[in-house]
Amino acid sequence: MNSEFVGVADKPSGGIGFFEKWLSVWIALCIAAGVGLGSAMPKLFQFLAGLEYASVNLIVALLIWGMVYPMMVNVDFASLRHIGERPKGLVITIVVNWLIKPFTMVALGVLFFEVFFADIIAPADAQQYIAGLILLGAAPCTAMVFVWSHLTRGDATYTLVQVSLNDVIMVFAFAPIVALLLGVTDIDVPWQTLILSVGLYVVIPLIAGAITRKRLTDSAKSGETDESAIAQFTNRIKPLSVVALLATVVLLFGFQGHVILDRPLLIALIAVPLLVQSYGIFAVAYGAAYLWRVPFNVAAPCALIGTSNFFELAVAVAISLFGLNSGAALTTVVGVLVEVPVMLSLVAFANRTRSLFPAA
Image 1 (cartoon, rainbow, N blue to C red):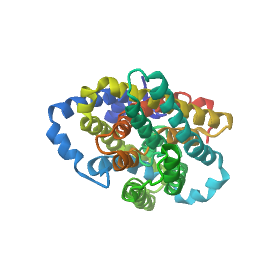
Image 2 (tube, rainbow, N blue to C red; image 1 turned 90 degrees about the vertical axis):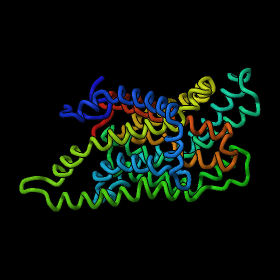
Image 3 (spheres, rainbow, N blue to C red; image 1 turned 60 degrees about the vertical axis):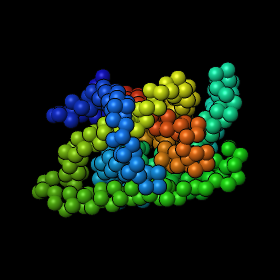
Image 4 (cartoon, helix red, strand yellow; image 1 turned 30 degrees about the horizontal axis):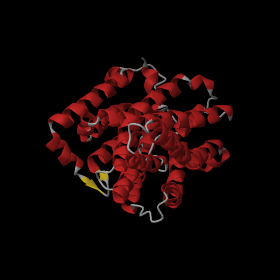
């Protein structure tokens, strides 16, 4: 295992290089710590889980902000006008997220819960789990995508445009797609969750990043390029991203540690179609980017965007439609637990296959 796990092309140095080099180990330890602490101190984690507004946990939001902010410093607004000259990544993002992903998710849900697991899952429960899968499949990620893009050294500006385009489409397409696949005509989209998440995870860190970038370029030393000053700054704050990521893993698994320990077989069964979907969607998007000769710094984030989910939105809708203790809500929670380890494994794979793609 090496520094390529997190997309660091240069040789790691200092303490943060050590953490990056063994990030998969720290993630595994944090998962175990989260489950253990959540089981040992349930009241503490219940209190932390209750610190939320519109289904967005404020502690997790703050930590994700810490992960997203360093990438936002790298967003170059001047280059936004050139995004239209490179439409391939945007096309793949739209097609995978809205024309493929929701429908493969429902197909996998039916295949596993109504065929493969039919003898061990009651039909009524199976429909609940399928509903949860549908909600996850119809909600592409807004926040953590920036983290995965950063770990693959993706084009920060292009990633911002991809995520923003997804968010705009989601406003109009999420409810109709969910209504179609669930057969429910009255979908009450939790606009507070959607707007708050976009504001917390995109707008605020983007503004902070733009202000920081302006100050860095204005105060660049004589003989120092703007990009050099920005690179030095982002390297200094890398520990913030890694620590925030590890703390997020502890919290997410701590919130649901009791579920994992109480119902391990059910959690494993729900995780199976989610794993197949995640790796399958990544293969489709990454393969399309490879065949279309998309540069790696666009191809990797493009594939990762299609793979990850907007779990806050999915959880909120599952609770509103089916109830807090429903199978659908449980499925969306399992989606949260599966996502981080899966996405890190895909980051590792992407970084190890970087040489297959054209350079930017």
